[in-house]
Image (cartoon, rainbow, N blue to C red):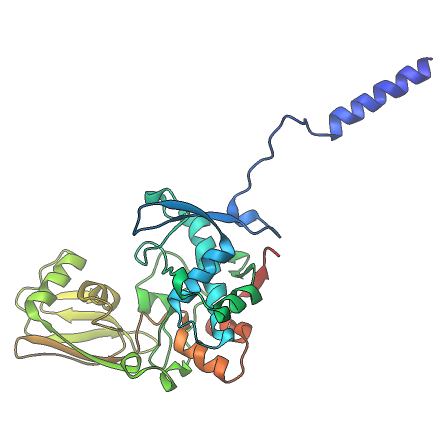
Amino acid sequence: MKREIFCFLLIVLLITLFIPAGCREPEKKPIDEYRYQEPEITLYDNDTGEKKRIKMEEYIAGVVAAEMEPSWPVEALAAQSILARTFTLHKIKYEKGVPQRGADASTSTEEFQAYDPSRITPRVREAVKKTRGEVIKHNGKYIRAWFHSNAGGKTATAEEGLAFKKEATPYIQSVTDPGQKVADPDDREWKAEFSLDEVRSAVIKQTGKDPGQISSASIVKKGPSGRAMTIRLGNVEISGPALRLGLGPEQMRSTLLDHLTVEGGTLKMAGRGFGHGVGMSQWGAYYMAKEGKSHTDIIHYYFKDVEIEKIWE
């Protein structure tokens, strides 16, 4: 009898120690710790002001369709899919998504990245499905998945293209970009003119300093790819990326400048490429895909020492 009581007590003890209480709720994992389970995110619609829950892969399809021409080769779209997925998870993990909207993501390009589900095509679906759950990491962390339209012949470092100094980005490298061979004319070369009042206002807004009457313009410092890192306008120096932001990135299409001068009361400039030049060139991805390269080839060409990891099935 004593032996039976001992065995019973031993079983009760084992159950208490090794089986969790049934009333206890499972701990909610941060979104970046999900493995083999596709997460659902909160998306803020900037047009309607509404928030909705959406599966990650469905969201990525809408991003790829908006950020890249949906008729492009599947491998180029696949590379864009991995970048979009990585960008999203990086923002959620390290910046809490879009906290001002109380959401993981938003449809605003200023706040997050482009999103347009109306442009989704079977080719976009194929690319997203082909890379399902795949992200880019460097030393176990999501990279800053930068991309741009066309590098104008050579991609930029993060510091020269974006004036980015917040952290080291050793996975960003300056490489020859084949996109210049196939890009649309406006994405290859461009010219622009700005009134000196417009330039002065842009400099004041970006630097807090008044350049005074602008009678000259010059490039003070160039980066590894030849981009203007520092520009002098009047008596003020401003970073190339800051000037581009102040004048408008659609007008001053890049900081890879071939011509910069003040003539007849205007600032005249000409350059190559479209975008900040950091990370993957979309036109370069297009060219490589047309040449038979895979999406992994494309990513490893533009990003150094990175791993492509599948984090959900």
